[in-house]
Amino acid sequence: EIVRDAVTIEHEFVRDSLPVELIGMNSGLMCQYIEFVADRLLYSLGVSKIYNVKNPFDWMDMISLQGKTNFFEKRVGEYSKAGVGVAAEEQVFTLDADF
Image (cartoon, rainbow, N blue to C red; front, top):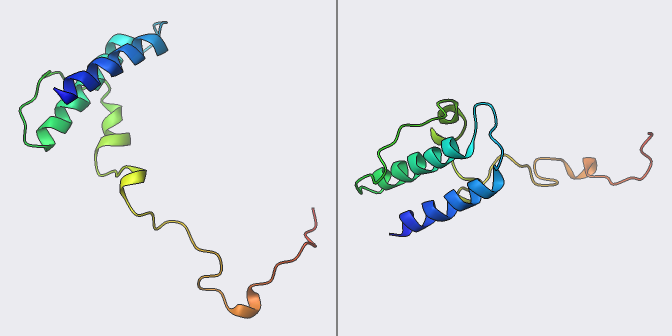
């Protein structure tokens, strides 16, 4: 029921956000994609699919679904901390940058 409610809310948002038909992407296809993602989530949780629709945007598989992690769900290790791995004598702050 939670997933159905979420899909309904997403449908309303998409219809309001995409009132104009775009080439290759319109509110109907976006709604189908939302249903596809909801089914994928249900399947990953071990629950039966509700919508049984195919992905209308095959290219989205390469971008967002396979092997990616939500930024907020994972500890980010790609950023460096200031001063870590740098010798103390190299940690100098100056205001003499030449622009």
